[in-house]
Length: 151
Image (cartoon, rainbow, N blue to C red; front, top):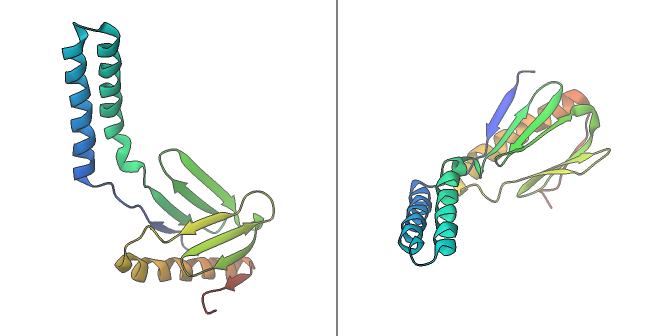
């Protein structure tokens, strides 16, 4: 089967990043203003401002959620640094529910993909594609799929 990749990332809006950057610049300005009167307070405010500015760049990847299905494994990337690769042989069952998809593992924590963060349109388009692809891969690997959506 071919490799299938699904990007369920909910983007951080440009306005939110602008607000975050503005707050960082504001902290730096307040820090320089307060530096003469209270050096410790000014230094803390400057450090906070630099921290805000430093985090405004990687803020785009905070809501990242990428699922990749291949013949050998299931690859899930969430957030900035979380990356989980699971072999199909360790998946004992897949549960399909109304707003989530759960991979039950033989050992370790189960993996859940929640569809609640998606918009209504994305939920109507992307969710069936993911469920169809996961079901096809699971059937090819002999993993049972339990569909709990019908009641």
